[in-house]
Amino acid sequence: MDCATSPEQQLPPPAPAPAPAQAFKLLIAGGFGVGKTTLVTTVSQTPPLSTEALMTEASRPVDDLHLVPDKQTTTVAFDFGRLDLPGDGDRDQPVQLLLFGAPGQARFAPMWDYVSSGALGAVVLVDTRRLHDCFPVIDYCEQRRLPFVVAVNRFAGDRHLYSPHEITEALQLGPRVPVRTCDARDWPSCKAVLITLTQHALTHRSYT
Amino acid sequence: MDAPWRREPGQSLRPYLLTGGRTRPALVLDVADLLQARASPAADAPGPEARQILQVCGHGPRSLAEVAASIRQPLHVTRVLTADLVAACRLTLLPATTGATPGAGPAPGPDADALQRVLHGLRNLA
Image 1 (tube, rainbow over the protein chains, first blue to last red):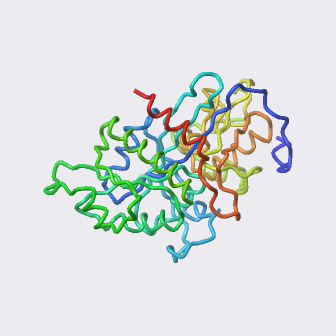
Image 2: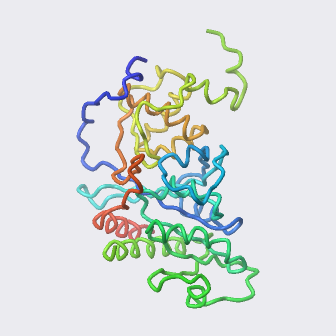
Image 3: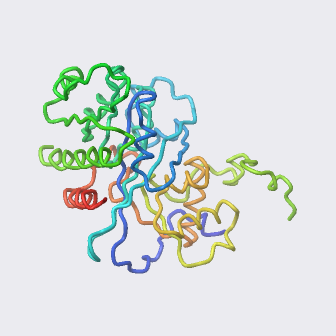
C-alpha cells in the first residue's frame, strides 16, 4: 500500500462528528498480588485484556531512566480495561477511561512512563501487610507530579484494620494525598476510588 | 497464494513478519490515541491483522492499547500496522489531547473541564 510510505501525509479532516470521544489514561499500580487485575476487571466494561509491550519500547518517550540501570529488552504485560462514560446529552464528549494495571516495583518504572504522560492520575493499591511494595510508585508519582490516591485493598486475612491516618503516616504521604479503603472486587467501592482520584486531580491542578 | 503456515491456530508468525520487518510506524501514536474505522468494509484489508484492527475499530473509537490487546499483538507491532491503516485512510485518528510527545517530556493531564466531565460521568454510572 503506497500511502504507508508517506509519513508526513496530511489526512483530510474526518467527517464532522457531533462529539468526538476522548480517552484518558489511569495507572493502577501496586505490589504483586495486591489486586490490580481484580480492580481493572471490576471497573472495565470490556473483558479483561492484557497488552504487551517491550520494556525498551515502553521507555521510548522517556528521558529519565535512573531507576532502571539495565535497559535490556523484556516483554511486559499491562492489565488493560476500558470504562466508557457517555457524554451528557449531545454537546458533551463521551470519555473513555483507559486502565493500565502495572507492577509497583521500581524495575517496572518504564511501564509507568508509558502510561503516566498525559494521564488523569494513578491509583496506588496497597496491601497493609506489604506496605513497602508501593514506595517506588509513590515516589514516582510525587516526582512526576502525577495525581494519585492510595487505595487500601481489604483482604480477608488482614489482622489489623489500619486507619487512613496511620497509612498516611506509614507511607509518609503529603496531607493532601487521599487514602481510601476499598474492595477491589466491588464496583461501588472501586467507583468511589475513581471519583476520589478525579476530585483530587481537580484540586491538584489548582495548586500546581 | 497458498500459505500453509497461516493455517496453524494461534500465533504462528514472528511479529516482525507482520510488519514486513519495519519497526518504525508511519505516524507516532500514543497508547491513548483513539482510532475509528471508516465506512469501508474490512474484507479487502491488506492482511488478517489489518482486517482484525478494522473490525475492532468498527464498533466505535478504540484506543491503540485496546486494539493491541484485542488482536493479541504486542503494542509496537500494532502501532506499525495501525499507523499504516491511518495513512491509508482506512482509520480515522482521534488523537489523545494529552498524549505523550516523544522528547517533549511528560504531558499534562486532562484540563479542569475534562475532569469535571469525568466526575459527572462517574457519578452518573450505576
